[in-house]
Amino acid sequence: MPFVNELISEEEKNNFDFSVIDVSYQIRPQLYEWTIDRERDSFLIWVKQDREPPHHDTYVFVWKGLRFEPLIRYTSEKTASGKFIQTCRIENVYLPKNYPIPSKDNDVMLAALEEALLVETTARYQKINNTEEIRIENPFNK
Image 1 (cartoon, helix red, strand yellow):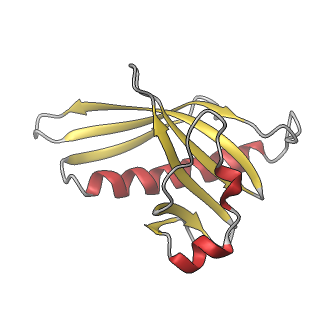
Image 2 (cartoon, helix red, strand yellow):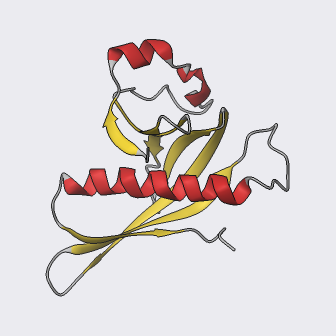
């Protein structure tokens, strides 16, 4: 089953260990929506957006029980049709302390992160209905 963007049910809030999304410099995010792949036991939750430009968004991505913190920058480009191309660029991914470097799983984790971000970003911009295309840029891809 692929990633899906959905509301977090009260039952799931009680069943998942959301302590993994605590970020020391940020109050605990509101748990109402996530992008989840139940088969891979992975999920992505938006945590915060920086107040100062370039307004990076911080997420928590849980993959194989490990917590990654992707730092994302969104940009928009208006097209001739008046709609927008939304670009989601992975600027950095903070790794868990116990994550081996280099890891043979790194490419698989990054591919799952890209997939989750595409689903989350698509759901976000569908609500606005002014998007022509969504792009995911990952400079860490080989």
